[in-house]
Image (spheres, rainbow over the protein chains, first blue to last red):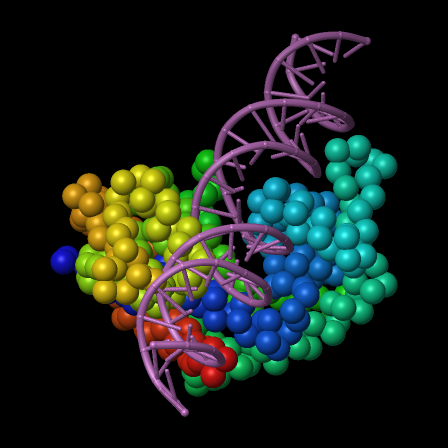
Length: 147
Length: 147
DNA sequence: CCGGAATAGTCAGTGCCCTGACTAAATGAC
DNA sequence: GTCATTTAGTCAGGGCACTGACTATTCCGG
């Protein structure tokens, strides 16, 4: 015995929240473009010409994962990658025409999906929820810094 | 332009919360046993002799993922798997001696880790936080049912 | 100017997570 | 009792996410 109730463990709940989100994303936003792919497109929309490392910083992904996601977006011709003439280590990222169109389309759908996802909470609870998650994950990110 | 602030998207925040949790888990609970592996061990502790499908139900994992996680726990000799003599389709799962010991050890550490993870929130906020995540993910799980 | 440190990206390896197709076993309707 | 349906588990394939080792380029101190 001595088993624990996992529904009191925030880590376990975070994983289930993620699952719920992915489920809803596939149903209401896109079956082809995933949420992390959208996040990368969104970062490049905000700051065209970003390099991969900085994109990773913006969306909270490590270099390897960014490289994979970027690779997939390029394969689908939603993203372009060119060497920085100023710094031969960097690649500069930019959305293609189709990438920009896709981003706009998904932005609308993602907003609708967020409403459905948070529908079980009242509006003030929704704001509180977002605030609490943000505070917890930001605090934990600090612990990473001094590595 | 027309980029969106991802810190208002609960899905994105959920992913970051997961990252934060994994980071803390590795630092404070175990580098070998992952949180999903612990969840499976915990389910088997609560109900020894569970089959894989039911374990998946208890910890919110699909059959394929359970099979992988179970496989890794068996390789580490923390778990045993035997055919159900009553039903030749099922495998019954049970912790080994070492598995039970490991589960007890990690339970203590996980409790400490949860405190650290939630430390940025006041105690009433912590309860609220857990309640809100639970409500959102449970509601989304309902949407899966009628598949 | 040159050589060592730092930086951007890649690659291999591990683990989580899902879907869809498949196999083997059990069930149940006739 | 037999055959179609359901069920438990496996497997292939795709995507996310990390670490640690490696390459190429840039930067910086002397």
